[in-house]
Length: 109
Length: 109
Image (cartoon, rainbow over all chains, first blue to last red; front, top):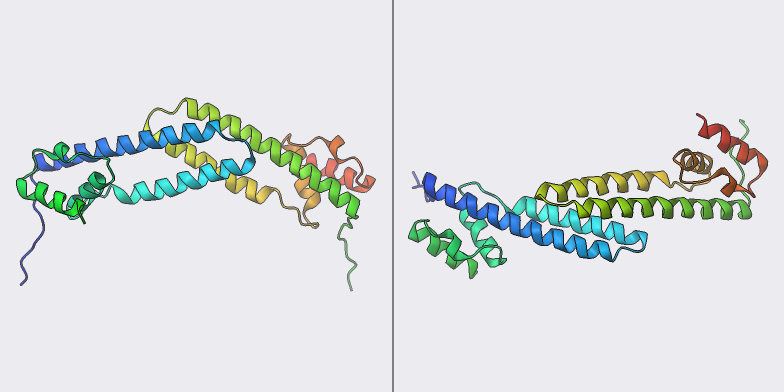
């Protein structure tokens, strides 16, 4: 029998992670909204509308896959968000030291 | 042998139809742009962005199917555009009288 290497999450830690994910998500969508507003002001020919649609489709697909909050994925999710500049490591305070360390290592990969 | 009932289009008529389609398309996309601008000004929560994306996806799908300019479909395409208020029958002047009459009949269906 192999030993499980799954990271264990306390309720408090899950709460911290969920709050961090929510913050990153709100920031990402806010930036997206600003991008859309800029693009809208430049709309002139019909193709611009479809380009905006393409951008939104790509962003939605990206975001849908990115905020994976299953426990087995959480450390990867959080580190990607830090890497993308959507989260600060300091916003993960309260997670066990080994989790914070793993996130830091993953962001450097 | 069955007789072909396909409508025949002269080059001049095709030109008139293509110009009419282009006008309708430009009008439809212009209206869509105005709708997007309004919706953008109301963007506040993240879900608003995805609602905008849903609207654009639906519109694109609708428009992609609507401007069918194959000769066999042209009279149906034109009559639908008249029905939708995107074309005036007067913009089809120059088409043979029987074609104009068919479009008028189809718009009432």
